[in-house]
Length: 100
Image (cartoon, rainbow, N blue to C red; front, side, top):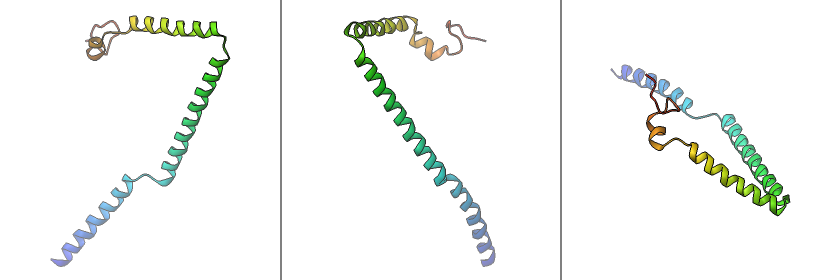
């Protein structure tokens, strides 16, 4: 009986060990994800800085035109946006009709 219990515990331990190992990611994978995140953050930061610099270089009239164009774009996009009900319950079709 004692040997059977020891064999059972040994089998349970060997089955549980690899599964715990599979749940944790390898150090190399996490390191590569960290470096990818850092590079993505750097690229976005550089892009935002370049965008600000480009906007600063524009004349006052051009800045006004850019702001007006953004306002116009928001209005146009809001008109073309589907209703909340339609977006929630009629996801299959753009016109709002369900596809059977």
